[in-house]
Image 1 (cartoon, chains in turn purple, blue):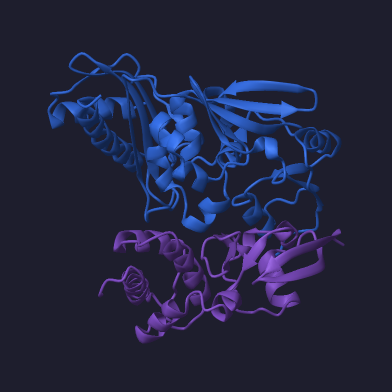
Image 2 (tube, helix red, strand yellow):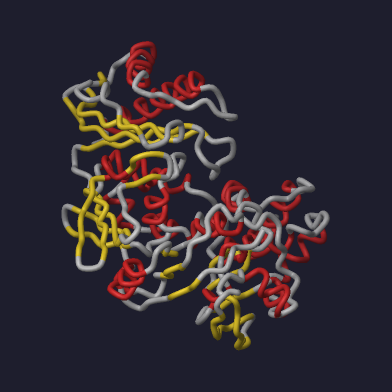
Length: 160
Length: 288
């Protein structure tokens, strides 16, 4: 039996208070305890990126983060990004370009792209490099890179 | 898979953390967790306790201390990547850092954590060896600094004892006449290196001297070449001459056969990387 710890943090802009096992990872806490199943679990060792969430504005693997480590942090999942329409343009572009494919890796892809786009206007090479930390088993990379690039250009006010 | 149960402590001070390490058998430090957590999830390790050092303010920060740059135990790869101090004062590290993992992992993983793990294909241990960095180890009531050149002792083995933690790493600031080079081969950018090379040299009349060549990724620990010492590289060397020098330096290697290639293949790859790196350094030396 694992030790339990009280945690309090901000999730998608709202306060969360919970008591969690020390060994529970953040991905499982989000999915199983809070029923926010938008965050997907793939490899569980930090390679695939399907579980990416934003922690204090930076993308992080929720499978490599303990739920107890979220204490005091600002965590944003795909649900929050969607509700707050932070990446509505990006999501539209994913649909338009069939960058969703099967959809399993999509939340992680969107989280990575959200952080990248928030930092400025990335070029195609930068987009590819950022997305290299996310696996798409359907190999829809071309469409995904296109979608992110289209949003980068649109946000910068340029025509694609 | 899921981690086994463990005790979790999150001390606010270094002394508190050191006390936990001293008093608990099987306690491990958790900083970025980007290598530790996978081993827990896969049950390759099951520490009795994780000592999460993320709340310890004293372990933060990259500090310019005239001849040395201090990187605290909580400094993330992303911070190194974005640091002006590192870019200007530790150019070799600045060259290597874009090769470290991917964005989400760089956001959490730490320089000192990478040194503590001593993965042979990781970039930071090789940089530390090339620069002869000082790795500062603390335990309750004591502190010692170990040269990176003696710190790495084998596959995932270091000079750190169980009751010690890496508090910081001290890197020598680049001298005006120093020239650096870095290159690695991996199947995909950001993946672990099959083989890599980190080089420090001094601008000598007509070329490069005082070579420090470190190979990594192909052996249990970063390998500082002995043969490279004392060699000089003429800036006007032909490709053939550079190839010959690189091949003779790469003879120091004893690469491990693996699914990524035979040892001999890696030695050749290392020599090719070294030629490219030296060429690049010769160009840069012209601007020093």
